[in-house]
Length: 475
Image (cartoon, rainbow, N blue to C red; front, side, top):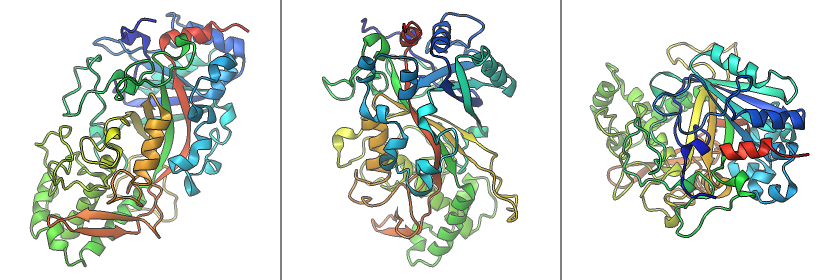
């Protein structure tokens, strides 16, 4: 097989983002094997009756709608993939997300037993089809075409997300700032971020990785596995009200601490207020923003604490920074735990080996703190529909989730604590350290769990040739 990389062989949205404001996920079960194979065969041939798989070489102009697919292990089986091929897939993919719950922190309120349908029965989840578009009507049209024959698939459920202005997410932070860059992929809308360019093998099977001379195993035959990748699809409910309440609690607690003037020097609230365009920002309100910045590692406008630890600064480069020397970004901050960049960690070989392509979009209504909460009505569910894409579910997504987010094994100063935003926290045992200029810390306690898993699946995103291969399978 040719080693020359051709973006036309790869599904879109893996190496380049679509930047469409709306997304819909169709959770599908194979209803008729032969009809499903015909659907696969037709999805790359230009036919109008089946949505065409969007590839990675759409050129300068994105299509009006974008359509991609991922198959679970059960989905590959349902299509009739030979057992000899199925056996070459990694164990974590074969077992599926539900069975790997402990490594992901999916325990207690996040345990798979609590997941609503269709995620409660992973044996029936075979295909996750993703539609990106500008308008809801376009999502409807593509969904109708995808299911028009009524034979190939049964629709088990649909999930819909919509982006917010200025790349905001439910906790109020600016997101979607950085993704790995690849030397082989030109994206004129991307900018330099100071991080080393990732080898294609970070995401695509069959290509060189960060580890010299080592590549991830490619499922066989090559026509099936080469240029494929894995996706950890997650439905993550976010407790926005609980998060804002915790910021209130933490700010009130900090006002009683003797080191408070070192954390927030008198008068600093004015500078923070100016940066956030808030006049007359109180000391308590400023402390809320200080805590929020420390928990994430970014101020809520996107300014990295590594570059501006005392206040947001819209003039700094929000992507080009590192954790070196005496960086005052907390060791346990969310973005530092997810990607330590070049900062010193215990597992130095892992600094750039667990990078993932993240594609996500909020679901549920935007939280408005100016509107008082009605205690007689339940809060609407809000969260993130997230895709965490990489060549190895075990060595990238699971290792990050377990070792870094929920155990803190990368740094002795945070070992035993969970990620303050996404971790499996318990108010009785959770803690987080705020670093001070003097080198000492203030420890916050009582962090509740802000993010709860509501479903998900491990999916294999086959290459375009692999989709044709699956469509050509014989009984």
